[in-house]
Image 1: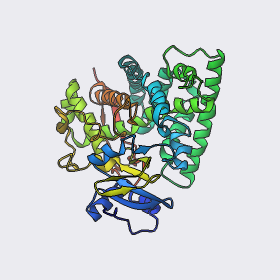
Image 2 (image 1 turned 135 degrees about the vertical axis):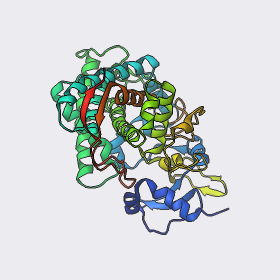
Image 3 (image 1 turned 30 degrees about the vertical axis):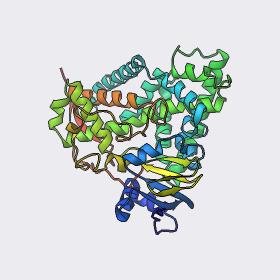
Image 4 (image 1 turned 90 degrees about the vertical axis):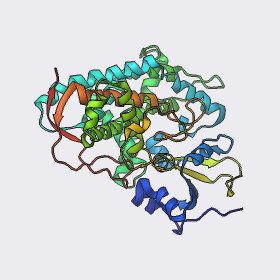
Length: 415
């Protein structure tokens, strides 16, 4: 039986924070393997990358999610008791609840709300000075997803709610004040949504039929019980927060259009070209760095032993940049997706595996639709200039973001 290579550091937490998205990949390259063991937060952790590793990682007979995500991440990013930490029938039931919201009609409705928000902002941008796209997108997506989800949101609350959703997204992999802001934001948001759940259940707040608020408030688990009010709030946030996080992908799409201007014309009015472009943005740019699981029961794989209870991280960024899957992975080449057959274990920017039975993000279709609409607006609804600014994409910051937020000037509507 081979021994899993062990990273030399007594604890690699600081190295993970320093190296960011390339932490796992650099060490896999160093040891010439796709699996190694280290210590993170003083706990033995196995790190994996690549398609075979993804197939293994999403095997529910070998891995579980309960107890895998560090508590500091649950307290800020994912919430405690949400679908991400469930297994077996409870996970399938909760995942089915969320997937019931993702019908083609519902996705189009959310997309139309986003389009309406975008077109309403263009005249404002025309009269403004420099526009920071990231900040604008956060508010636009917050308004759109709350309207779609049946969540009442006064205009006076938009900035606060968008800021709290952003704070949760930023805070899972950091320490210090940014993390503390994420903790406070999570508490405020859960209190806000617990109140809405209570009022909906009491009949004081009529929720639109089929909306996320109505479906989650009225859902009953496999034992026929309504979700605890705080858990219902967590799952409602699992609709709102990831949708707002799409603003990062949209900023990367704007950057890609700027860096590869030939694609502006190619995607305009061409849905197939827009699809390939969006998929390459999702593959190429850093989004979520890793996924976490625990070994359900001891097993051997490729000559390595995985003991029961061991935490395992799958390198999502490294798998999306694996040259065995993606020739010239550091080049932005949307044409690689022409005729591509979807591979649930090869393209994993929002997790891998199957949507219905596994832990792949339920909102992935929403992400793709919103990105395609954003690309259509960036190339068709308006014109703009990109002034000099810092457009470097750091792979050390998790989650990463352009320092400038992508600034545009001289916005003008097209005919």
